[in-house]
Length: 317
Figure 1 (cartoon, rainbow, N blue to C red):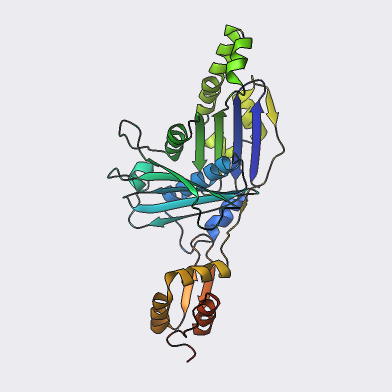
Figure 2: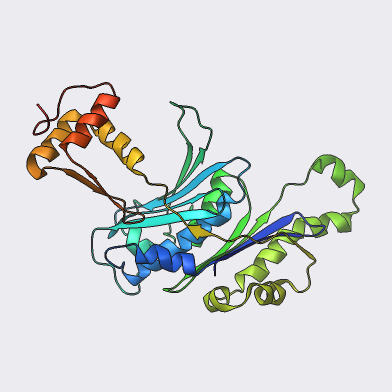
């Protein structure tokens, strides 16, 4: 069972979220034709958990896409989370990945790694690009990040000015994540005048104190402990307000219609060359493994619908 739990620390400007993926994570892995190397699989699990945590904070309906790419054996890894706690993820591997490879070894051996977050509203108008922020996979001193959580924390601080603590872990059976984030105080200037110095210190110190507790969480505890037990063990001194839990699901948004639009975007000449060579165009979804096949008649119909009525080579004359 996959679980998602959002919570607030009562009276403090701090929020938290916890996600654990089990059955849905195993479904995602089963859709791949070939299993990924263990470190890459763990990275995808952490990215999936992280994307769900971050997407749940969006103030609009839409998708959040977390992407890391670089100059290492892992060329690209992507996780997408959408409304309703739906997610998918995939990776492109172009070289050998060591059994103990960390994030830097997989993506950033020459210092060219990048982490990008894309926000794509559901009601985005045609011609309007999604918002995207990008940071390097290294800290301000140029030291490569060994774990994804470090890179995302750095992104949130640099690009969003949000103090964030992330704990992420994944294995073959489970992927999980814990997010702790500082909240801005509404009317902060007026509020400060009403608080005693002791109260102001308590609010300012809340996030560092809670983040320090979160940092003590081990991978095994995050992956294996029941959520109630985990939250009590970490924050038994805090007053938590817990919201209704949710259930994340693996879900791919690919469709024959979307693949058809992609083929039209490639252009008639490119599609014709594939038809001439293979007799059909076959596209496989990297996220879910679905296969879409377009024969010459299908391609004629695609381009006719798009305003191009010339027949494809090898198709109907």
